[in-house]
Length: 275
Image 1 (cartoon, rainbow, N blue to C red):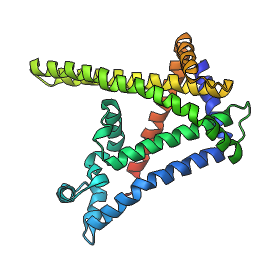
Image 2 (image 1 turned 180 degrees about the vertical axis):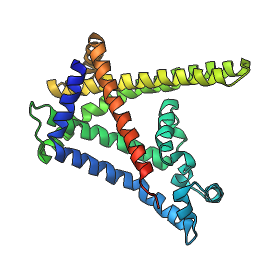
Image 3 (image 1 turned 135 degrees about the vertical axis):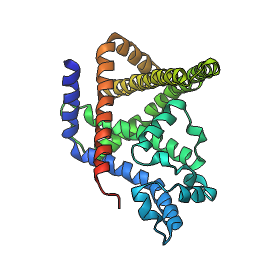
Image 4 (image 1 turned 120 degrees about the vertical axis):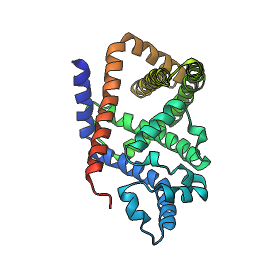
């Protein structure tokens, strides 16, 4: 019950800072345009005066796509049926779990790193606003907080990446070897499929867990104005394990809320004519 109350309290606090929400939305929108506009230009140039563009609004044109991929470079190579509609969400989730980031074109890797740095910078501003009992947004205070905590949050990010890469590379590699061995001795693909699903769930759970711990680390740094990043990380681990039920419950409830919002978006998108 307390977890639900804390979730409602969080949404209520967010509702009191609509200007900050709008600012974050605009920043994310502008950043996404860095990739959206070049892709739009490439697709528009490829479609030309043909009716392919109109047909693509109804169904994916594989014949055109094959021709497009023959000359695709960089960002263009990422355009595929899997990024259309809800497929994009599942495709990104699969890439996250399987750590396939470095298979992407260099421009996306660079922009991805820049986005993570931007997110790290903005996190300081967000937490500095919510640190007050009654959140009140101002540009000056937001960016002061963002600048004040950026270095500390950056160091936290580097520490968290050690855990992420251990989970994705080492643990994920071990799981893949198990699945490959099972596949060689299995008479059907059912067992390897469900085994892969189980392992993917475990990895995703661990990734979220590590992210949760370091989110609490950032909160501790802001609340206590701590400059010892390692100590804050260790204290966050201790705090999470002491309150495992409530911390996990709240964090995964927030994740569930994101899933619900995403599903609503997918459903609404399907109702909107694409032509």
